[in-house]
Length: 224
Ligand SMILES: *Cc1c(COP(=O)(O)O)cnc(C)c1O
Image (tube, rainbow, N blue to C red; front, side, top):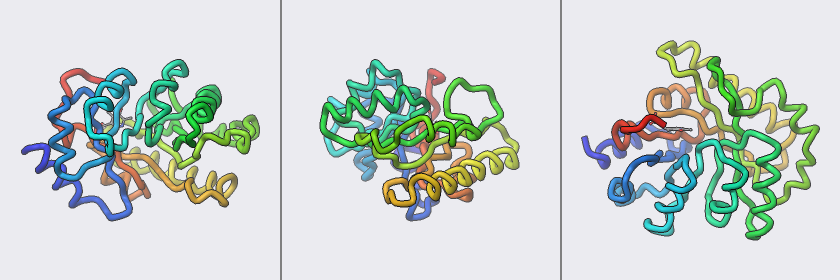
């Protein structure tokens, strides 16, 4: 199957309201161009240097999404053009993104990453800590952050019940945040969840944005 065939197949499985982020990390310019030619415009990357190289070489109407863990000292490189940052996971990084947004005069769309999996992970806010998070930041003062929703990754497992449980938790959390903090904010609308192996389950649990890499481009050589 070619990249084109894979993309056409995946699109045929997506409800209209679900956006596809084609995760192109480790993949070449030519591979991305093949996807581009099918009409794909939204791509996801998780390394800043790799993203910058691709952004420079590829058509400017591509919307780049940053899906990896972002270090504060690298925000400045992507702030001028990034379409969405998916994995915002600390107050520190929120403040840095806000300052870079101010510098470039653009509000940067951000998703708050939550830790929903059973697996140990350094990344993501704890779902139990949201009230603490929002009481410790002056949300209104972060005027260059466009709060756009939430993001999460389920446990890597064959156990569908575990995956359903985790995705439905993220959906519940989104609803709670929406009604408590963002009811006046139409931008707060996205639930980014679902990857190659679990995206259909994510959609059943309310995903609005799936991040799919290997099912489009084939397996990656390096595991990232
Ligand atoms: C790599 C990656 C994906 C895509 O994973 P696939 O299994 O190749 O679809 C999605 N989300 C994040 C955060 C990733 O790092």
